[in-house]
Amino acid sequence: MTVEPFAKNMKFEKPATYRIRVTGHIDESLSGLLGGMIITRAFTADSRPITILVGHLSDQAALSGVLNELYELHLPLLTVESMSQMGRSGNRLGADLRLPDDDHGRFTKP
Image 1 (cartoon, rainbow, N blue to C red):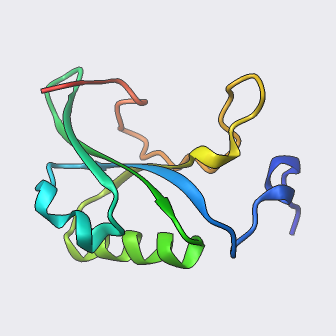
Image 2: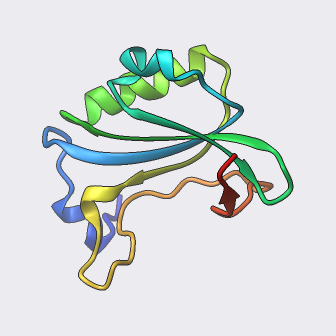
């Protein structure tokens, strides 16, 4: 398996800040279930509801726990980004997983 150059510095056991986007709205009261992440509800350019979760997690096992909770809530993932892996130019170096029909990151605040 080939490891991308940016991924060589990513460690499973290290803390990182993540931004996760899901389809649908999540109530802020579920923050505790989701690793204490900050929950922001928004809409895409075509008025579809999305939720943006941002938070610092202790390691990728904690990230896996958050993703499992989102799965249990039946909320489809749009993106998962490691904000801690930003390049000097501001380009994302973390994973960016997108559904084929997602909004490509465009959203508006409610």
